[in-house]
Length: 310
Image 1 (cartoon, helix red, strand yellow):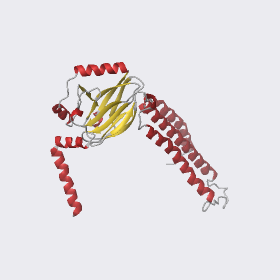
Image 2 (tube, rainbow, N blue to C red):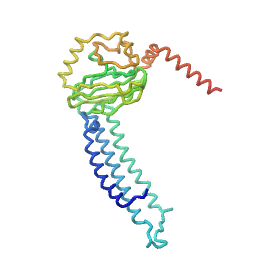
Image 3 (cartoon, rainbow, N blue to C red):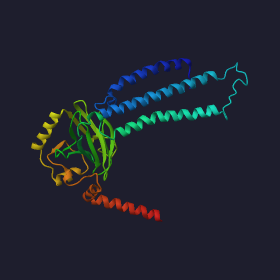
Image 4 (tube, helix red, strand yellow):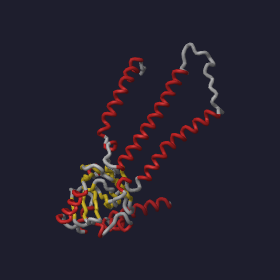
């Protein structure tokens, strides 16, 4: 289809409008409105990368426009007007080698620095020990164990503001990823190993968390609520849960681990007294719960090994 000048003018008029609409929708992007220091540092890195790459786009398209106009073919062009000498040009070859190195370095240095910083509790709460919470995923629910408080919740958690939370991530079965967009990025939950994720809420409120790794039919509903509140309210909730919630039994925990959805629950003890899914013993625990599934996987592995040997 032939693009006329009229069409080109319409396109140029629409582009600024589209950019304005994009910016107007940024308020709805949770990661760009963080409620804690981890989310703040990640937002700064995102915006730095976006503006840096937009600058590159402007330069590239500017040079492209100049080339198209400066060296376009037209009736008055004389043969031999365009005779570039690029091959073997040391200055040009050095330039197009150094510029990408500068770009990669400018993006890599702040990214690596931020990643290393996020492996420690936020500096703003160094005067307080992090609140330790074991976050265990199961198809398709979340278990949050508070070892210091000896309580456990299912599909919701409470955290104090202005204090780092040390999430110890693991899975009882399939791989998942804990993600609370308002507080920071996601990290994976895997069976038989433990990952550490530090997050912190500065503002009180109720934030939505979810599984960020597809793991089957219940994936979209594997969500939870995070209640961020001041220290006094958090301690009050802990005391109430310790007094009013029933103790968690091993039989009940095993039934909760079965694939399926669950409502919000609270207990005055934790599953850590029987199993820590972040260790290999935790994987053995899951195998004992599902021996048929384990035997099937072992059978498939043996068949594959036999095929490879043939």
